[in-house]
Length: 187
Image (cartoon, rainbow, N blue to C red; front, side):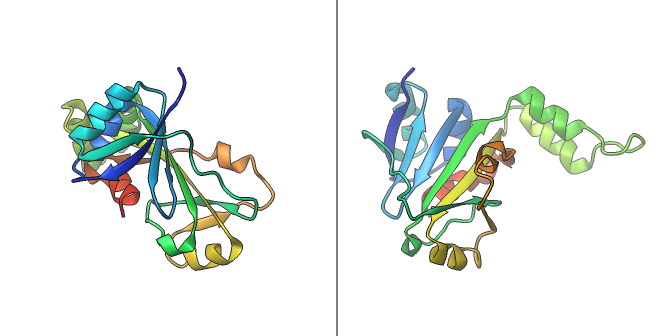
């Protein structure tokens, strides 16, 4: 299927992360002006799910691409950047399957210890379908001067030599009920 590219506008955001867990996987791109979503689903299904999350969508032809002078950096959290930095912020999101999430939560670090109380409660919420787990990977493209400013607020590691590090980066997890993706997308 051809990826669908949509420009997102927050009308009254409510539960975007939960709706993303139902859609599966997608790539968010945030520039100084707009937030975009590229997803391998039909436009009608995506429009319906995002409308339930309070987000208006508009179809568009393409995503903003990093200019020649911008450098990539790997981000370790979802703290939004200032629009004044003129950065292109890309977050790849995918829903983590229940089997993988519950196995990771219930795995004990040491053989004689049980899983922690917080892990058991989180697993219970997943099994009751009260929550979901989203995996994310974030890359920030900005100028060297902007990177110095951004590192004061967001944990960033510039990628200088190893360009393959961008694709090899493991997914980090967040719970859908926490709303971290929504806060990042519409800050």
